[in-house]
Amino acid sequence: MTSRFSRLGWAVAAAALSTSALAQDNWPTQPVKLVVPFAPGGTSDVLGREIAARLQAQLKQTVIVDNKAGAGGVLGADSVAKAAPDGYTVLLGTIATHAINPALMPKMPYNAAKDFAPVILLGKISNVLLLGPNQPTRTVKELISQAKAKPGEIAFASAGQGTSQHLSGEVFKLLTGAELSHIPYKGSAPAIQDVMGGQVPMSFETVTVALPQIKAGKVRALAVTSAKRSSQLPDVPTMQESGVAGFDVSSWQALYLPAGTPPAIVAKLNAEVQKIVAMPEVKAKMEGLGLEYTPNSPQQFAEFQKAEQARWAKVIKDGNVTP
Image (cartoon, rainbow, N blue to C red; front, side):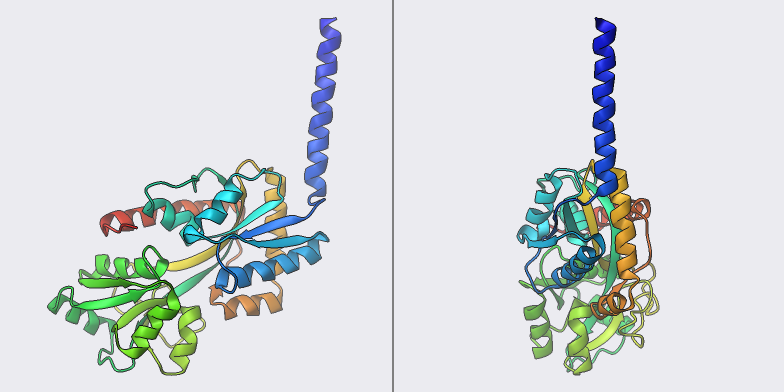
């Protein structure tokens, strides 16, 4: 009797495993939801909708974009962290949801390192150090000298406390010893507006947002924050080229699935997205958003995320940055 029930149990387990494997092989068999944890119209939303439309065509399955904004991306990210790990809920995560907020906020509803399966890094976006058109400073070295001569008297604007723009300023302070005052705004638009108007002498801003104003001559770019020059601003030097050794700050966009999602589904989504971002028209659109992409596997992206989390935790601690 025991042997018969034992054989029956093994048969049931084998059937369940077979069904599970079949479901993974056939994924997706129902609509997929892509959660964008920010409001419509921003870089994440534009990128998310482009990826969703292309995925829908390739997978021959509906892909729905769900904008779930709030708390700097935390609300949307948390909804994916708590979703079923079946491949049908995907997150478009960022440096904010998975590197900055976890180090900045004392209480997080999810664990960025444990509650997600990293799928693919979609690209990095450089920030750029901007000065108002009437500011006399012409180089980063001049700016550092002025800031050291007048500690705390020179202010920089950012899109808000804890943003990559704000933390670009904190890294600048840590690496140069220059004392700058931080003025946080409720978004990029009002921050760059006050730099253009002369209310604040300088700011750190994403290349995507800054480029139209740079081209119009309304602000002047001193240096980009990434390790290499931006393809959109090829004539603007990097911070490292400007004498600030070790300066490398980029915002980034990526895809995640809930932790526990079968590796086969993670690998398939990575492969499909790699095909998408290789398309000339998609590549051009991503470059237009300021995104610079390098092919990467889930494992490579996981290592990148781990390094980013450690790095920003140190910056936030050393800079005594609080929410």
